Length: 166
Image 1 (cartoon, rainbow, N blue to C red):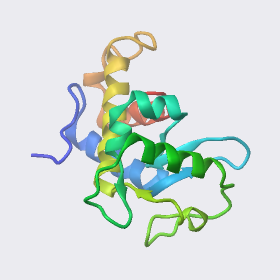
Image 2 (spheres, helix red, strand yellow; image 1 turned 120 degrees about the horizontal axis):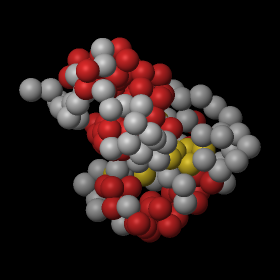
Image 3 (cartoon, one colour; image 1 turned 180 degrees about the vertical axis):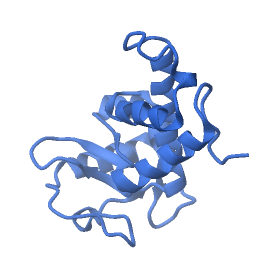
Image 4 (tube, rainbow, N blue to C red; image 1 turned 180 degrees about the horizontal axis):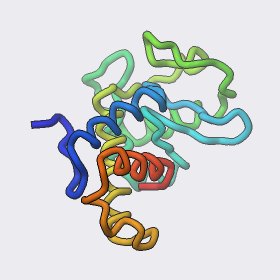
């Protein structure tokens, strides 16, 4: 059985490729960071946007993404995430992701980290939600025949949805 079973209507081979491709090309970052040089765009993991403090408080999965960098067994409170979020807002992104640590140097002072597994699981959950919305006609009925699409067409359609909110 696959580590991340494909959502209903999608080929497993297409799903596996989509997750692998997106992880590689979106770049895994294990701490909160500002993805923009000009506006606030706080992000974690593999392109998972955290728009504001209200979003942190309203979505339990956000807190569950994190662990303390010094003590991974420490319970994380919403206030811990809010503190790192507010600190990340103050940092102007200028560096690149270190391929060994998956961190951005100027964010090294933040207290919280995520893991690759949590980042991939969040990415998969966002893709699955977007696919479900597509199949329900949220963006029109262009995808009524989606389960019959070739695998590469499925990957393209779902990949394109990644920037949409889950």
